[in-house]
Image 1 (spheres, one colour):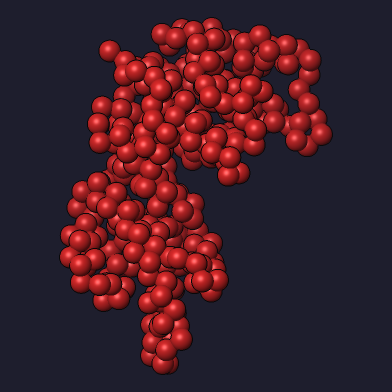
Image 2: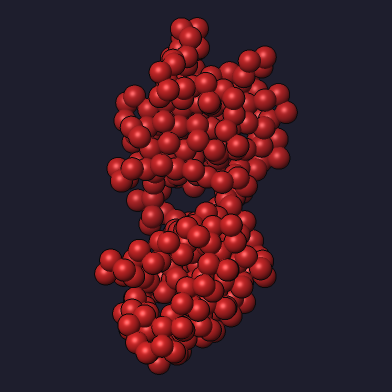
Length: 298
């Protein structure tokens, strides 16, 4: 959910700009306060870092004109919005009192500039420094279930139907199309008994596009199987089924790769987390964001 303050601050894209008094407050504090509350005071009531230090961490290694919109209510709930040369995280919510970050859909529009990774790193390092234990996300949309697992985040439960059913049913549908050594590697983890099984699946860079194209160009029975597999993808992708199916069709029809990890996890939907005290998770996510720049807090 995007706060009203954040919506106002980004309205310049539609030809409207925040009033001068808002700009002065932004220039001074690096934040927009809520209309009837002092976000700076509310932040410092709960957090060990000052607003100035927090904003400095959020801007680290980002363009000089980066905007940070920090909204904090009196009860400690609020949101962060970051605009950095086209890369925008406009939906990161937190509860400072309960020491919770995330749970909503994290939206980062990177536009291929690599800034999304820096934004994610800075947010994680800030809340880790402030004593939080985890960074929560909700993996959804067309590719979220695949992307977040590949980054190193883990599902809270592998029993969730919107995660378990796509993986197990799709794997069963294409298992015989795989080489024996790939089946030996993936048979156990495709049963999804442990959260970190998702990492192995997301890493499965076996290209199954050639096998699927062969079915599409084969006999009538083979073509029926091809369409049945794609229909299964659509049915196990929830509300995003049409988009997931369209993406896979596009990849197959334009000669692109379709990696098994994407085939299995695209369209899945699961709440997940990054546990700051899990070395394996921190290492995997750290590789994605280009390494951690802040020391581990005591």
